Image 1: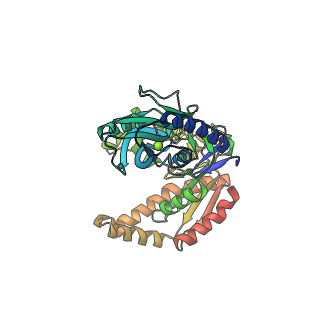
Image 2: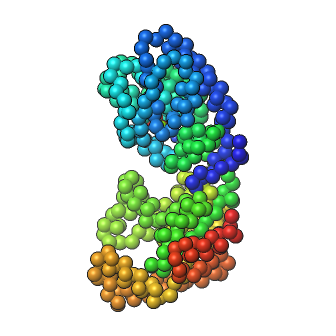
Image 3: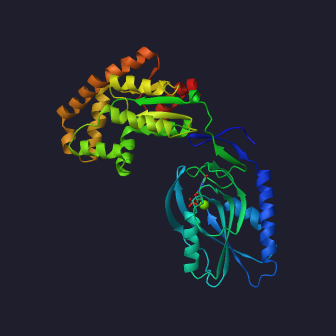
Length: 378
Ligand code: IMP
Ligand code: MG
């Protein structure tokens, strides 16, 4: 097993080697074979996609009684937290009326998915439903439903591999890995993406996130999430925004601090749209220093004012925002940008982490220049 793997933006470490999974699958298959030895009829093996694709394959080749195969696709996880909502993405691929169904799941966590599915199958006319899961997190399983076959129990931690994913990645690993909560925080990198409106920050940040496995920290997104979740912080922010007021620095900084703390195993962060002022930059330094970190590099996309002007005007035209095409309004935005951000640039120059990149050129050309700079931080 490889030692430590990066899946999207997080590190995972070895947890269950394939050989141990095989043994557990041997044992559970033996129990199913025993129970179905003299069964009258042909049960349906129901693979719950996507997670149980590998487990179902391994299990099926060990079953020695006549059986059919069918699949269904459900989804209830986003990121590393159960959203608690089971959605049927793809229906049953064959009729189960009057049939005995053996549901094959990768993992049972809270049990929400499996209980919903159990009810759904009985509704669809199944005569009997047996549950077989590769893994169970007994600490979190809260349901009454009997789990007929459990290959292995695990602690309540987030895992990937052998069919299990983190944001759709990591399913292809043969072994199972666990989220690494022990990566020293000093190993985390913190980048800022910086530049005038129209410099292509959004585009380049997205490319950086993918190539370098960084987690995106956008204060706008964080605020929207707090508001959507109706947290006290979100409510406070909403009241201010509704009055057309700015959200105070402390609120934004509080959100950033909790985002840094809520993400164990993350390789690095990229801040987008923050800090906008020297005061915020100083606060960010303090927040990071409290967590044994620092701003490693400020990736600054530079384009001449004329280009900024043209790009803003063009964007406003395309998006049909007539007001924003007025030269004096555009010039005003550019002036504001200079007045506010120039001091931030000097601040980071003083810290020695300011890396300026010529933002002119195609997306690929600019990204190549960014990659050349990022080499120093790998
Ligand atoms: P439940 O509804 O809370 O029991 O969640 C079950 C589903 O969540 C599984 O079918 C998986 O898709 C997903 N899941 C639960 N725990 C993990 C994990 O540790 N890693 C990856 N996916 C998980
Ligand atoms: Mg699943």
